Amino acid sequence: MKKLTGLILLVATWSISFSQMKDTTSAQRLKEDYLNKSKRQRTTGFVLLGIGAALTITGVLVINNNSDDILDPNDVVNTTAGAGVFLIGVVSSVASIPFFISSYSNNKKAMKYSAGIGLEKLQADKVKTTYPPYFPAVTARIRF
Image 1 (spheres, rainbow, N blue to C red):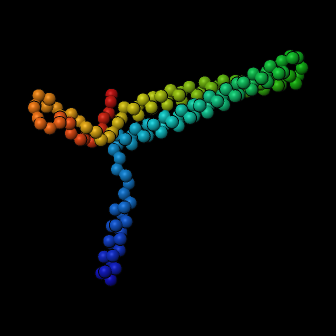
Image 2 (cartoon, rainbow, N blue to C red):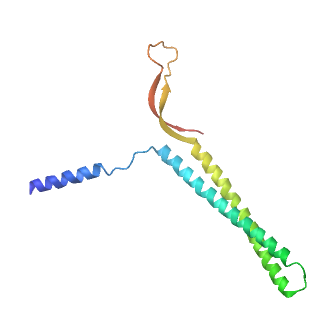
Image 3 (cartoon, one colour):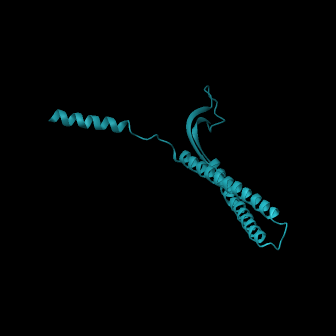
């Protein structure tokens, strides 16, 4: 029984040690979050702009196609429908602008955060040394 309990604890400890998540710095995670958010907002902006442009063009075509006889009741209904489609297209196109602005803002915020491994220069510039004035370092920078 003692061997079985010891074996279970050993297997549980071993499986947990291989189940750990990749350790990333918070600056890198924050940068990725801002970049993903920016990408989603830019995609939403392009979708709204594309749908708005298509609806606007469709509305203009419907209005121009039915503008032969203004007093015909069928033409009034079609012209009104074309105007409605045109209006929805314009509103959709205008609604895409805030998404593009937010996407640019989040992309700019993401560029403020950087993390990595690199070489840093020693601060003691006046000290004469026989070794290079650089040393390896893990860096995390936040620009304001």
